[in-house]
Length: 443
Ligand SMILES: NC(=O)c1ccc[n+]([C@@H]2O[C@H](COP(=O)([O-])OP(=O)(O)OC[C@H]3O[C@@H](n4cnc5c(N)ncnc54)[C@H](O)[C@@H]3O)[C@@H](O)[C@H]2O)c1
Image (cartoon, rainbow, N blue to C red; front, side, top):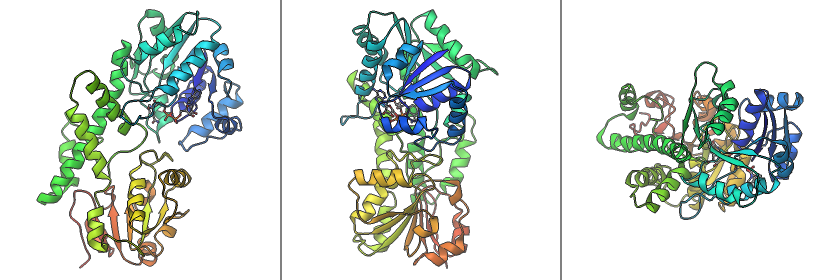
């Protein structure tokens, strides 16, 4: 099938590349000339495991191409995925201006009947609105399908190639058939395509993200209670998660969730709820708990070092909002660094992949001095009085304790991802603070 994609970001590029891998002929259009230039050179402008080789092999086979010319892409394609960003507006609602503008671009270039598939995460009612918008700019027949994406950054290729389910919101039989022919190749073992109306498809995406965010905030609240009553959240988590009505995933306490999806989607759903007269008490609580969680260690830091951190030197490991990505959108590490620097500290930070995106994001947050992004973990800890762990990259799980002891000026770890067993860290000679477990100090 001839498929077009608008948006070469974390979703559009993965979707387009995986669709070309199945034999489709795919053109991905993006307004960003630098991004398209990078892709045309066979490189990927962000870090996503497994994406680059797949992209290169499909470019080579002539099935995958890139352009800034959306109109050309539209003329060449039978179906068009819209995968542009839907960021948060100040009032918490989803900003649909990119989607609307992409839809108008597509509508104006139509040269025959098309199926337009909304992949971006959008509020309920957007399918209908976009349908009306497009109909106002073309006389060609157009079907609008909602097909929210559930891939996880860091495992995006595997998720797209073997999805748990594919949600498809359609209003007619022909659209369902089109979606089946696109997705059948991804579901040879079992049919996981779920067909519903577009409004339910739109809502399914928000409800899924809200549920996952809710589990994280719930466990973070449990961790706080554990810390006060002398319980160990690591044991509690295992005990709770082993109930198969509950399950063990997304129950890790930590510095809270970040990224380009959970924070904005929880708020957009809350905004949507308020707009229809439903008070989103749970959603607000999930967001509130999460917003505070990233500052969890600060009172302990002030207790140890005082509120004025001038002259103090700290290390941060992990800048991405989660491992296996270089995405730092709403990453807790950025707020931790901003707070430390604001109080006068010097921070050296390391991330296996997100160093440059974090550097750029910190500048946008106004953090231009007091932080240095370094290329090695033990360069970050050189002279540091404490180490903060903000992302659970696997390479942090078994650190070189000799290198840590040698490089740090004091041996204090604030572990925001509960990577270590407190007693073993204590035996290595470190004071160890983590989430929902007792702090330990060497004897
Ligand atoms: N990132 C994720 O893990 C993820 C997962 C599931 C769903 N989503 C949703 O998918 C959507 C896209 O997210 P993303 O992370 O891929 O965004 P992104 O910011 O990485 O990419 C969006 C791309 O669209 C391009 N773009 C914007 N307007 C355009 C236009 N008119 N024409 C052509 N290109 C245009 C931008 O230049 C950018 O490259 C969002 O709604 C998001 O909520 C994201």
